[in-house]
Length: 123
Length: 379
Image: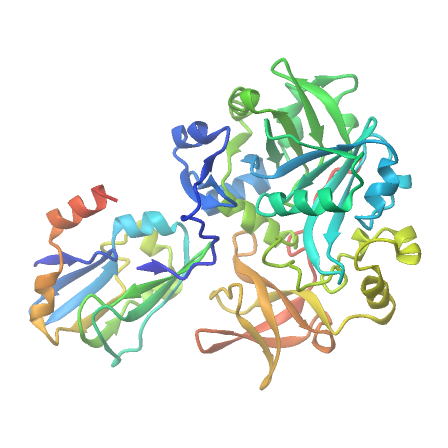
């Protein structure tokens, strides 16, 4: 299944008509120890580039933006119990939420893995 | 993803490297702009560094802070006209907390004053040091000399094992163990003349070492080669001082706050409370007698969501205050905060609410320090 990346360090996996969203290994390494994740409500409509979630590290709160527009269909309940999953497994068990894909063309503007790798190396 | 950001952003100003800049980078520090310098925010991670300091010993580079030496005829009287300190009780080898106040009693900075032979040594905050020097220069008579020790570095070694690690290397006229909290002395470290004060900003036992900038890397290497010691960044310094209930200038203290509201009455020395004769004395003395309409208090929050600086505090529908420092306490595994609240809601145990992104979080006014101080006051 294809994985896309944003320049705000979110990743998005697309499987059929559902997308899974999380933050990248680079993002978690920059944030440090995560103590709380505020997830969107299931059923909420979120818009590409707008606030979708908030990650609280010991130090600061950071916004996570919606990589695409769509409706939130599921959130990762495991993060309530153990927010440090975002540190230990950011691109797998530490996923944030699943959403519908309202405008597939929005995916075309995102980076693929190689593109994101090059983007991070330039930071 | 992007930071909401409570940090001082000074990218537009040319950032100065500190004496240990390369040393920090070689140890994997992530450097951030702070107080006009590039400083290490963390090495291996804030929580690991925080816990290491509470259990063992951490080395902090605080060379951004301003080290000043005042000397000249009539020094004590001149300084007492500027600071609410009683210098008649500050003996050689002692250090004391004091406050730089404006004419209205607002806090321009908080600082440490030490009695040196024929001089007073001040340590002031990094972000305020240039303004402080201006304020002091203007307020002090011309025959008082002010030296800015910009070729000195400042290292803090903090934690329950700091004394063991440092005692292996520090030699002087008397052993390091003779220093108790808020005392200082001259020692030798790796052949360099250094001043060591038993003080710090973590709530733990510990030391602040003033040394020549060119000796900083050698001394930092020497201390970090001890098994008890690791380098610790600014991130953990902030979470440690918050657990210790210690104020951070520019956040918990500002020209808009008085030291009495902040619970820093001990910073106005007893004789000065009756005699006055320092900037802001009228308001300060009135507040000591009559009390203040708001107080700086500790808050423990329910749940895991931290409340940060700027979060509003409520009692029912009524806004009663604002958070000035807040975060997640690694020691308590819970969010804690400091806030100015209306005095009628400031009693320990008062239930209040803090608003974070439109959500009301239950909180209780709690005693500080949140984590007990463990200063060494003698055996």
